Image 1 (cartoon, rainbow, N blue to C red):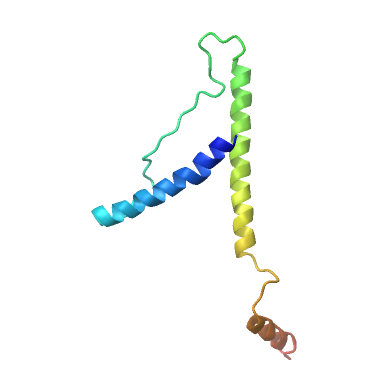
Image 2 (cartoon, one colour):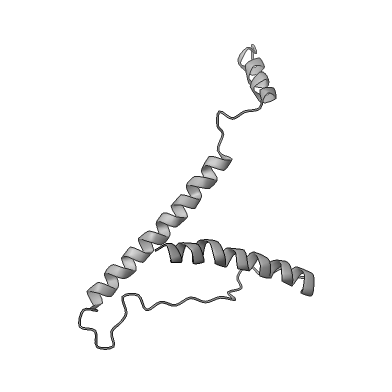
Length: 107
């Protein structure tokens, strides 16, 4: 579990940022957004070379589980971004003073 998260969520994006930086330096161009310099494949749930326990139902279950894990990782990142970007109680003193003047305004 942790290997997938650390590779897919940490190592690959870090590598792609470094590759993009090198492309900018060497080629004078950024790495295209739609480029896929790394491709992944998995045999998880697909060990059908004679393993009687690996049935189509098992493969479907494993695929559903992996999709759920990916969705949870996206949700965690979205929640983090929301907490970073959302309006919160961590306002600067200047902004709080401005809010008071607006609340006390006759408009």
